Length: 413
Image (tube, rainbow, N blue to C red; front, side, top):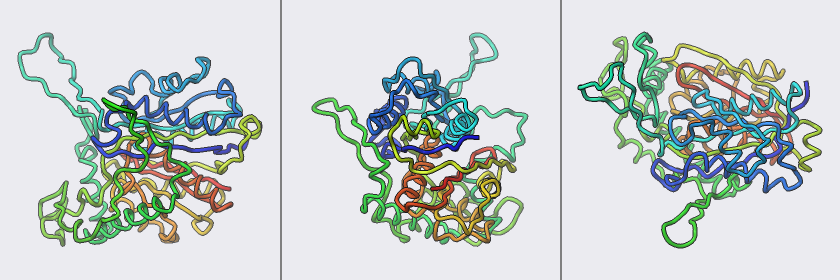
């Protein structure tokens, strides 16, 4: 097996729902990150890229028809460079990186591009086809922005509850209070704001020119959801988003008035964005003329009951560490996607050896945002850049995945 290196990692700034990137198509966002990789690697002949892997969780709108291939063409890669799109929901971007790394490791490729993209703003409504021609009844449109739609009636209804209710179940299981979740969310914003002010995102962020009706394009240059002025008092005023009954499932009493603990403040927002990485083996590195950021060490995947999906990273990380021959004591950074504060805190509670001080040191998705298909690739890039700044170390990127899966990747430098 060949060593696989992360040569470079870039991402767009993350836009809020109907925010600064709302007018930009997802395939254009993906193409922008690929072009940026090429601009930063002028010695590389693009024809030497063996494949382009892109993650996308929706696939129902403008990113249809294989957004990996569309992005490669829009980015100006030679038509001989193929592209593929993969879907593991929230971990689609990480799955793309893993598939590209695996292809390089076994010798199927020497250089590859991997990433992910999502525009939750531009996710369309879909209309199912009727079983009968010319139906007289009304038809229902389904939003494809997030979550379950057109659910198979054979599926256990316990498994198809809203994602936020799953987070409430984790809060029940680990006795995680509303105050703990709000405090975690506040720290995410504080860390992200500090990292942004210190320029720690500069090496990975590729500003996006956004077309204007008049004048020159506007340069969208910074993550849009970070709130430097976030406060516990403001978060405490938010109402629970998913549960209002005074009792949890199964009749166990809730200590908080109103019963719910998960709010818009302690959960990730809806977002738009893309990320891409350049991967290579030893020979590929020579062709890029670049010093790598980090080396891919091991991966781990796991699955659990869908209604507790947020805890799936626990075993994924355990497996990845075991395959890498590492322990939590060897880690310098762990980037765990912050779908919900309750979900992250639940995972941490099941890692007794883990030091939370190394968790998401630059803030996480609660502050930065969670453009579904892009988040996994964004996390890998963030870990790689942190290890490069350190000069050495071990890090992990991991995500929970709707319908009960977890995925993890170990990087070393």
